Length: 246
Image (tube, rainbow, N blue to C red; front, side, top):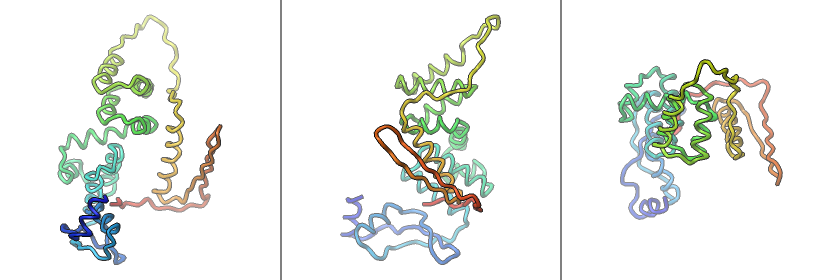
């Protein structure tokens, strides 16, 4: 960022930013977030922009594409962004794939990741597992198998090839029907790292705020415990937004 801001200070912005006009007279940035930040650091008061007259659907698509290109979204967030655009604007997977420069099968595989339990999604991101790890888990038949597999993957630090072998073994384990089976218990996450659960709380509050609910949380930490106080207004009327921020 410093290198870019120094270059802008010397030479100005060589490639204009792309913006779209909004009904309130302001503009939404479509492309050029890094250039905008660097221009502010460089002290520029005015920056060149190209105004693009387009639909809300295209604006949302531009914003999603910009975020993906900046690599600021993980694969679950990309999938959520795509699904939000599809649900809001009735866009097909093929249309989104074309706009994002992806194959339709790649978009389909990305959306399938959202079927994983939310706790598993949080752990995959928290422990820096890859999209390939996540896709391996989709092959399993039950949540109990998924929870068991992700615990083994993290505790044993398995790579993708080892994860594929683990999943294959779990799928092909033969159960003898003549041996009484223990009743299945509810799947329990075995992680002792408290960060996973702290992030789950933060994610829940963030989801409410993005949905228009004026929720807020306060965190109090001592040597022995972490305490969260979450406040949610009783009489909350909210509208789920359809905008995707650049």
